Length: 253
Image 1: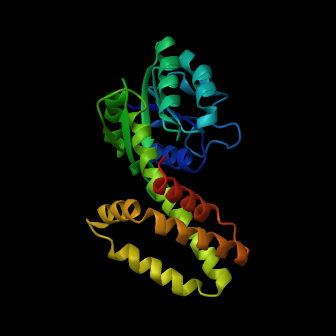
Image 2: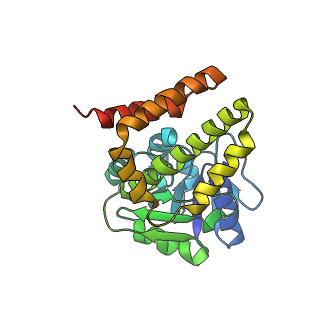
């Protein structure tokens, strides 16, 4: 039996997943108000049209559009998988909306960048329809793992990782901008690369222990770093936030 999948949102992630689904032999009913359906997809007028006769709906638009997409598409949907990066609270609200309309719901978190991976991007699903979604997509080449529990747990795992990875990326970008302004960007880039390459199993424990143990001294150090970036003409967004965080650790009361 040929699987019919509605894909709502044909941006970077949704477009790549939709194209891979077509290549895997699925019928893809596609809708995006701003991006036309690619060759091999069935263009649809709206979310309800796309969900008509679909075995599965993949909502890959945006967290801000997720609720309205569900309200519009639920009338004709059977199984709804929300792949948007939203808060756990949003995923729980979406699940409630789906339940009120008799639609099976899964919170699906995309756990790695989609470009270059497409449908094979690692995903984590929770919620009532998690196992069903994995069972439909994995035979087509997807990598959907499931975790027992209510909607929101997958989103929680993804966002917890984001606190670290996106925060790290922001710190690196800000540091290199400061290095560029100071005329030593390549030296700093090599230093950062060396530190990341050298990281091992003990790195997290060392970072956590050292941060608490030396919060007072490090708060002063980051205050000086904040002043330096300001003098260099670089906005100290991450640096000043780190200073404030360390200050709170040093003065918990």
